[in-house]
Length: 199
Image (cartoon, rainbow, N blue to C red; front, side, top):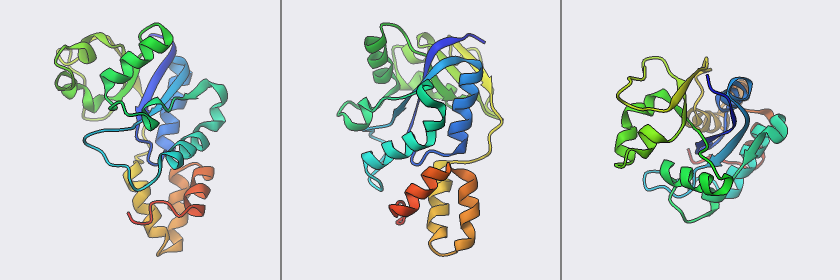
């Protein structure tokens, strides 16, 4: 496993959950000194109108504050007009830091990377760290220039968290399930601000 000064971990984080934090912790233990979090902004295939950009940023900051200055939150794409694509993020980071910054992905996306960018940059040139996911082994023809990192997922997802928030409004007994999935400060923020109630 190569070690890096920093890697980038992008995603919607809508909301961030304990698997996100677990992956960050694993990266910091094994792969990099720092993790740059870039929340997803404008995308043609996603709509985040259920919460504001400010609320998403706040939840990410609350979820990662225990890591201190080893996690950097970069909101360039969250608030900007540039479409959030892997290529755009990579070029932005290269310009900002003067070098290629490895990006973190689940191994399930490896077969699709060639379709994201016809030049082959994303699949074969961009340095990558894949979080190994059961049932999604990486074949050598799919991608180049990558490391794999094992992580035992808790099975959480942002979609599931949003569903549990909706259940909490009806069954208070679901609160414990929700607390197990997200950081306590994110939990408090969601309930206090009545987020995801339309889910």
